[in-house]
Image (cartoon, rainbow, N blue to C red):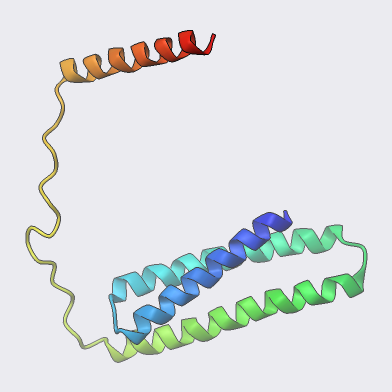
Length: 135
């Protein structure tokens, strides 16, 4: 559980950095909204996990430091969320972003059924060959 909490905290830190970057460069408002939702979900999951860990721990003194760390993550994220909301509010009158045509390359043509079957047979032959070499 503690490793999962550490992973969540890394994700929170990375998302907070992305939010700060988007604010600083006056980046995409949609991306900013999405990052805010994402960090909120991460914080909720982190809080749930933190509560589980604390319920297992017996020592109240040992729990103080993790409580402080968790509170720090929540505080930083809250401050950034406020800054992001200020940024979004200040840009309400701006025009929506325009996506240029042909930014996304044309997708590759669909593969016909015979090609799918041929690739499947080739994959099965490779697996069978690898199994023979392994024996």
